[in-house]
Image 1 (cartoon, rainbow, N blue to C red):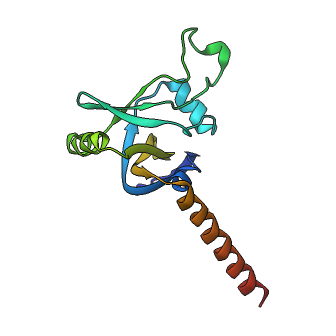
Image 2 (cartoon, rainbow, N blue to C red):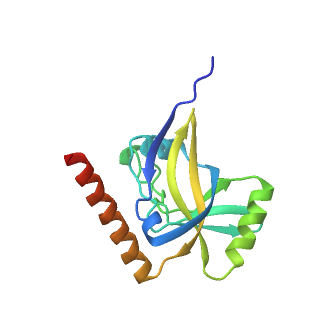
Length: 153
């Protein structure tokens, strides 16, 4: 019997606040061993990162993964290096057409374990305006107030 153990390692908490998420994709990510160990320790950040398409390959730019053990990592290690994403050709074609569209971007949502693999959830997104963000905050506060009122009953 095969059990898949899925555990979220890093999440981009501001992605849903700053963007309207439309489509999501799951991608593999090409990492070094010490980067995997660092991610499994929940070290790193994907806030401010984005995905670019170069040729027929997708890369994540701006993702920060600190070294697991600074003494055992190579001297020329760059924690902000571009990392290749493992996607199907059809998904890369879809993302390349989206990347060319004005106003849309590809943002990472979370990094997680799926069995022994490290995966990355990415999404196509459109940036929210300031008034949209205020509206999101108002909705969140009203839902919280309603839940608090029902809890007291």
